Image (cartoon, rainbow, N blue to C red; front, side, top):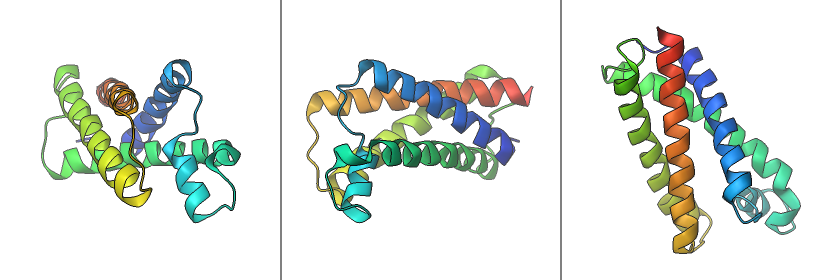
Length: 143
């Protein structure tokens, strides 16, 4: 069983590491969360809402970690205390699911964006990093 607290902490750590990768490998463009803020809250372009976008992204990442913990526990999936490999498997699959939801639902439907293939590739890579760190965190703390 993976507690919600473990999932939240894992989500925080995973989002921090993912953000470091985003900052190092990204093109310095605003994250989709800044575009979300600009579209629904602000009155300027996404470039003006980098801080709000990053804060929103951090909250999403923490929440996703909690959702992962609830999901693997509710579905009876072996994650956490049973070992690193199993936790990594489920968390990487979860990261891929976040990629699909983010790229299709959030970017294309909610934000009406048509991301370039390179952006989608980086988006997938960053979410895989998130999954690896989340799975490792959940397994490490659950031991």
